[in-house]
Length: 425
Image (cartoon, rainbow, N blue to C red; front, top):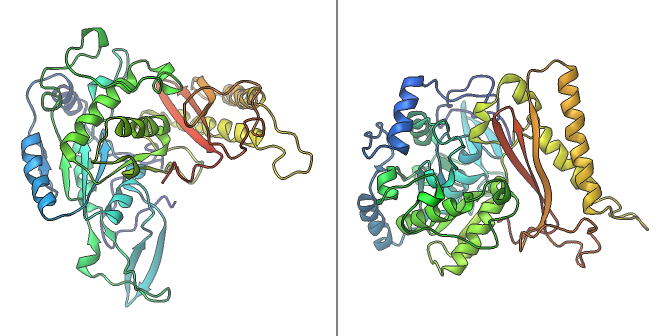
């Protein structure tokens, strides 16, 4: 992926050095306005009017359902990208581009396999995004109040996104034209209030919550679920609500949250949902900063300059564990390393990076939360003695994941080992 966005078809978002994964920042937002937005979206029973946008915005379930009813009647497919706002390049899908210079104009052909939003735009007649910071997936001590909220910027950037779809009969040597029928843009934004999504109210403490909630048992206690008890209960609940409202033909989730995406696929299967069906819940590869492979995340905006320098440590540790796990592959008589050895190698790399940061005088605190290897089907932790070959099928998919604190910012990442061709699609 390329860290830039050429603007013949749309204007570039506002970027400044130092955040959002590409050393870029959202439009400045005052402390006061952020407090007001936070209060309105998390605690208050009133809703602020949405900012002006070129994209239709639906703030109520009833208004969206009327729009969706028309799409059903017209037999139009609807792609769905759920977000909590603070959009970054991973959401928007600044993917693989092929550039053409023709008659002094820059034309852009966008690979239809690009990431999340662009993937949905390419594969559906209509694309809907939701922006909702879900209180139910934040523990009382977590960052609900300070989670990045950049609504005006998000809507502005979304209005600028478009895909120039390729003609199926276009030869490999032809130059695409800007036929308006080929241009696809986001069709609608669902922007509900907390009251709209939780009519009976919502408390962050689970013991105080009343009403209906969704739990996917045995799949939410490992990996992220172990570090964040109750998190997947909140996720499963709000996504069930969103699927019920949006009624998507296809839904798109990022690999960075692989446990979440696979858990939701289990949920869709168990609840016999048709919109989307399990085969239409897609997992899109993680978007990364091409300079150092840091996984793009809204929370990257929290990182200080020193924190941004050390943030790629987690990815480097996971790559070290991956190299260990694959050791001996293709070598005659090569011996596979076991899980314990690979995880220890990853942990040792993190410790070295902590020492290096200290030696270089970086004012940053790095704390490893976990690095683990789990079965992709059951999420069960691999035994310490497990090797790639001892598991019976060397291509059996394994999730190698980790979480790390950089100061007060918690970063997550994962690598998929083995055959994930039928999983990430």
